[in-house]
Image: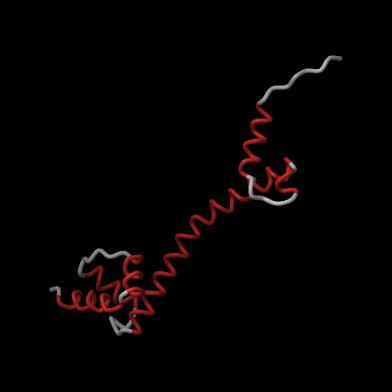
Length: 119
């Protein structure tokens, strides 16, 4: 029986998976079945952790704002600060407030005074 030359599609699929696994170590870099399993697992983890990263950063920002408000007696708590910001319709997101609280707390105090003076 003569040899049948196969196509290139399977090889192209494997090399594509191998390119995703370029930083893996050991068998996860060398064996095709292990490569496909590990790459699939890495994609699942990255998809899951993109959502988790958003949650984690939001929690970090809230913690920083809360700590700064309590230390500098801005409104005595995070919830009161956010409530007054929304009541006065000042558009400052939590990321910006956390940056202000960490880098320049005097500006956070200025923001709280602005909130108190707006009618």
